[in-house]
Image (cartoon, rainbow, N blue to C red; front, side):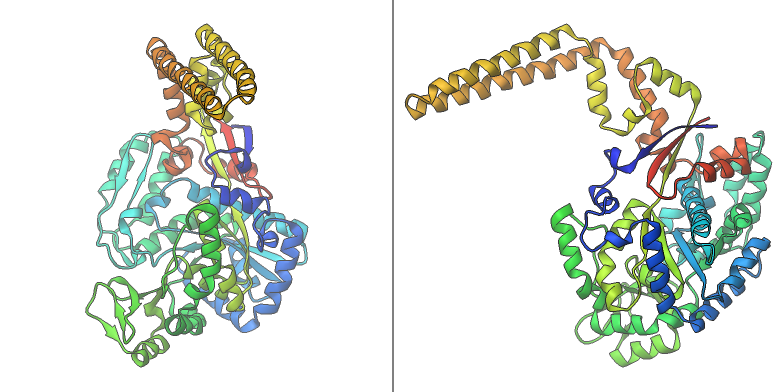
Length: 528
């Protein structure tokens, strides 16, 4: 394996403008929330002043209890113990409980979290930095997480949806036998199959399955795994949940940022509701307020104000944060400095800055995660033969294809020449027309527009004709695009990590870690 290139997010057309502007420190109010060691120094100071020993004891106990059934590495044990120290901080990433981890970017974001901790330790040797993976165990959209894909197959499990997905028990193991058929002859296939069987044993919950899998992959790196669906942890955020129920503070406080982002960038990633909490029972249902009572949407349950506050006081574990409230919960209970997430995650975190300030919680440094692409050497060879670069596949590829089809086309060159001549002639004519009556000048301008439209139509028809004539070249370009973008999207959003682990094993994780960028957000392209 060798790195082909690393492309900065600023140079990739499909990266959202909001993310680019954030990285370039062009959004007012977020200049200190981007990656820099100076910003981390400030963040350490802020978190030290806002996170006390009592909170440290609670998070220490939570990790100790939640990971007690796993075989922990010495590094993990040291990391758990170090959380009691005022000099220890966390760097966090989060993700859904996708079957067998889902798309491979799950692995990349965890590795970037681990490497960021290593880098910070080198820069700030007097402090400890612990990588944390936050499990989205309370999500209720089972259809989003019940599958994964390899190059040749699609794997799926059945289960009852509607409640917190982390509680769903494994009773469908047909996918394991199918997976075994695909990977039994791979170099590291046996390791993968054992991993899958251990994690997705009948009776394990999806929470337990992901804990087992993630621990098996990352224990030697010292990664700690946290489940926020915990009475002890939710006890720490009762006051914020109470305020949310009574005052709708998140909705009110984030309105200015949401309006600003909507006006400048078209829309926000997640729109705040009046109440950004769910009620967790057998199902997970939104809490609404009709002016008199609190309604648990899609159920017959209702509460008076006194009843719901009593429920929160006695059973905090029954209250579940939505996508916008979860970051606040996370930053409240962890001595956290930075969050590493995908572009969509970063975009909805940006809505919350004012709310964090109102709740007196330091807003973290936000780091858009790196992307990776593993591409076969022979595919790179085909790209080079067509006089293209891999970077071209991350621009507007329709434009790239059209340019290739019309490359050195004598008809196009002639059309361009005549069009330029036309523009020049009309420029002279318009200058002369200005010396006479206005309606004549308008007629000249209209005629120029009409004739230029004719050139545009001719070029369009020429491209259509050349695509028919050069059908073989067009097919080659389309096939190469699919080699780079399986299912017409980024590879990391389609394939499961098993596609790469099967050939390279744990050394693949080491290679990813080595190539991973920390200080900049990039697409890292590696030849295999």
